[in-house]
Length: 128
Image (cartoon, rainbow, N blue to C red; front, side, top):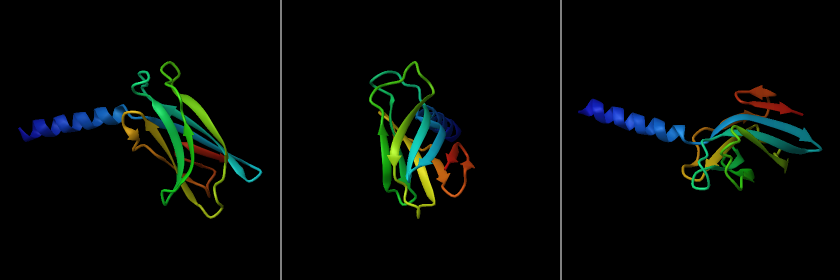
């Protein structure tokens, strides 16, 4: 009985995580002291009731540096890339995170850690 309960719990957790928005790629470009971010998301948008509706960049302390709101579902456009311009990332910040949000699950557990001291990493590239 305990094994069956554990199996059901694991299946439910996997199912929930599978329906959360995933960050596929992050591109950061610096020009004139500001950054432009291009973030590629993938999500099983079903329409207005469940879709990826935002992504943001946050500091390691959790301070929100910038947010890109997504105003409509992308049911037939997956994965998709959206940009945010004129983002100011202070020079003393060495690590930022990109987080994504959907209308049902909230902020996804899938985050991209960006080490601002390195030009490439897991799912990100920086061009200065």
